[in-house]
Length: 410
Image (cartoon, rainbow, N blue to C red; front, top):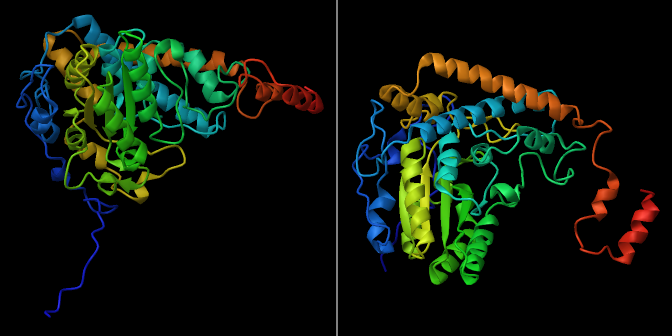
């Protein structure tokens, strides 16, 4: 019997570490305008090529090219740019507030603003997003009052969630924003179930589920894909591949040899891989998937290729596990700068307007923060009453909880 070579275990590693610049060739980029746009009734298996390539609209000169380039809507695109700017400025201000110990925790979406903003503009009132914790731009695009958002972050007496959720874990039903779960991947089967219920009722509303690259390794992800495929649920399954799940590279979740989008094809779901830093590509792909779902043609899985430019949260230091200048070298660029260049090329934006908009948004956010802080900040006495822990669980409070509340003296 011949002697076999010893077996070895493959452990994926990132292509860059501190002190070593990242080699981004692993991204498998496709030139802008090169990927075809099929009809919405395409068979899932026929989207295999689009699950491996990268749908892009904006080229390096800020021009819209290819079959995914749609007729530009001046006011919608200007609103989109302003919303992305608003999200970024909001994030920066809230990080400062966290450092000042006005809130316990915060997570920014730096570099990912185009995904939530453009996606929200492709949905309709009544549709429901099941987000993770980096989709605050969905709320910004729905123009949810900033004071309400900040009060939730501060866990103060006007916190709409009464201090029961970790900061950034919003819940705004009226804006189509389902309660965020800290246990990642749970929102996937929840979204598919909600979409199935909409179909059972004969409604016209669709769901949109959100997950990160790391959480695709959870079993909930695979279960949701099975149900979405079998029952043709009217749902969009978003995978935000921002390359890093806390400190582990996306390859650990299976993104090394295949794209995350190909998992959808393997489950019988139409799938797209899209440049998440290209506002026009995000908008077009989201509209395509939404129309497919609303036409009773089933789910679509979309992998949004982007980059987490900042830390995972205010508790994280990304310089410990990746090059500090990674985002500056990321080949898909900055989503705000790219849309700004496109609008400037069309004569619909200018440097003067950009500066004025930035100043106005800073003032708007500072005013909202000041108003929210008037209702309390972390650690002061203006927090939700302890009595609220007994509320909002049962329609009618059972007797044993009544007794416990009386014993607490509240």
